[in-house]
Length: 223
Image (cartoon, rainbow, N blue to C red; front, top):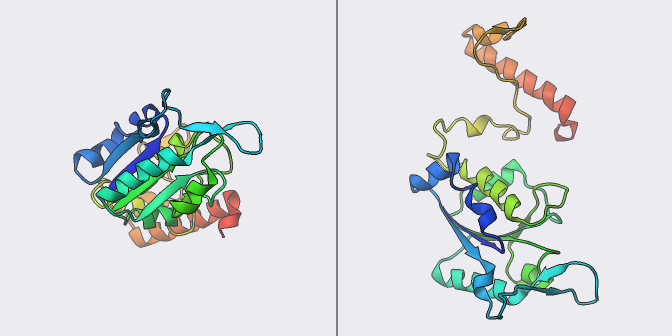
C-alpha cells in the first residue's frame, strides 16, 4: 500500500512514522508513506497557502489552487482508490472503515489546518471524509497519523500475529474482553481460573461473555 499525505506541517508527521509497527511495516516493504508539503505547490513569495474567508469571520482557509496542483500531480503518477479529507465535521472513523481502507492500494490523505479547506476542494477532489472524534485539533496531522495506524496494522504481515487484529475491540461489534498475564496472582488479585484451565472452548465462551458485559457497561450504544 502507498499512502500520500498532504500537509502544511510535515514535521508533525515524521516521528509517528519512524517508530514501532509502522516503521517495521515500511522496512518490510508492506507500506510506503510519502509526505507532501503543501507549501511546495505555491508560487507566492512567502509560500502562502491560506487566505481570509469570503464573507468575513475568524480563521484562515487553505486555498484550493495549491491543493489542486498537489493532487493533480499525484494523480498523473498513479491511480488512487480514495482521496480522504480528515476533518471533525465528518463521519467518525470506525473499525469497519479501517478494514475497508486496508484493502486499498493507493490513498491520498489531505490534512486540514487553520479553519479548514476551501469547500470546493471537498466537492472536486475528496472521495471520503473521516473524523477521529467529536472534538477539534489544531490541524489534521495527528488525525492522519491515527488513521494511518488504524489502517496499516491490518495489512497482512504487519503484525507478528495476524490473528491479533481480528480480536481487537470493535471487530465483532463489541469491546475486547479483559486480558491478563503473569503473575497469576498480584496483591491478592487473581487471574480468573478459567483462563488457567486450558479448556479453550470454555475460555472463548468466557471471553465473549465478558466482552458483552463490558460493552453493555461502557458502550451500550454498540449493542
